[in-house]
Image (cartoon, rainbow over all chains, first blue to last red; front, side, top):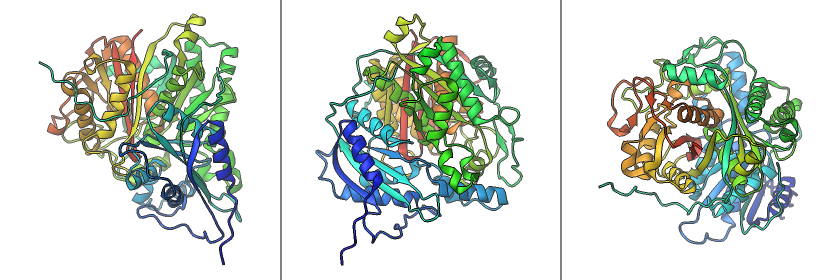
Length: 189
Length: 391
């Protein structure tokens, strides 16, 4: 029996924001994608939180489905989008500090989202800038700007939001976007 | 004869045609609140590190940081800096209400101890909206950058890029980090803090970094918009570059390839040669791997000029301000260039052959650079370079 597909609000939002930014979506993926997506695969070097493994998994799904990049010098930016960040790790560290217990050294390395971005960059040879912002529209605007200014040929935009209440699920989505960009922008000042 | 700089392979950096300027700045650090307090502290050459009093460090391997007195609160300090930068730029209430905020922070310090159901109200987006609201800035098009130690410098580069392309006339970029118990515990657990209580960038015998309070804000504006309201620029924001190493999750490329591309992109956007740089405020974390990598990056991007341009890492004075580093250190660079005094690279014990640069040692160096550069690097192999030019 084929697992039932699961609608992803994050993926729909990423597509909509990409369209608004005038970017073409080359590949996409989400978590959970089907009911078969239970526990996210572990990621070596990252502990106690699903944030980084989830980001790595959904990025891998998107990158596996893309066409081979044009030319060996293709530069891909990594743009991470998260509303609350790795709140699981933050809570664990705070609890350890308050209890006076040991903080695991590996928590230091995953204390910022850049670490898993660095993992992605090495694993998939993504040589563009690494950016993390807090909103989907901001993420797509950053991606569009990096492409427009030739800091990247394309951009992997990954959105991760961990469950914050009981009964909720961790969710993630990723899209690979590229120009050309003939888009409507707000004049902001 | 001078060899041509060994420019690392890089995409041909493009930019919009608009000129970008800085018209306002504000800062707070362990030297106190205000840019004059920062400038005085820098020119004293005295590092601001002391035993931490703000929280219990009894269980920590290292007990030093550079902190302001008392218990400053991040939202208050960042809001104050954003407002003071707007004041410095002479922005009216109406100007502010049309100006978006790009904020660089690690996050809302309250989120980790908030009840689960309350955490969505403590996200970085909500924090940024609160700063914008309290500062009278626009409620639209705000962004929060959380990209570790390049968060603020990336935000400044992005602000410059959107303004140069005419997508905005003005952006306020602010950043803030105040030393607190959780990040301190993490950095202590990671064994990257200097156990001798001093940061010694590019020096033999360096033992790591130390955290420091850092809050800063700048008004980034199109030259045209500044002229229209007769606001004198503090400096041109002439060039910017952001790159990734794709080398290691948390270590820099040992040859500095990514940072060299960032430097090259910033110089290209500024339309200047390596020899035109009169000062570099280095990332200079004071760690074993990062300083040689940065030295190699400067050699790669600047060629022979890397041996002559004055360099200092002022993290040796005010400490490492994490997500706020980029804005605090750009303001340090701005103050150095405008006052004609380059701050020292403190804590130097002796030369490390892997870090041969023209470091500013012993006392501040009188110089009037036409162009100066601020560098930052972060986990994930992220690198940024910002170039300012005096008007």
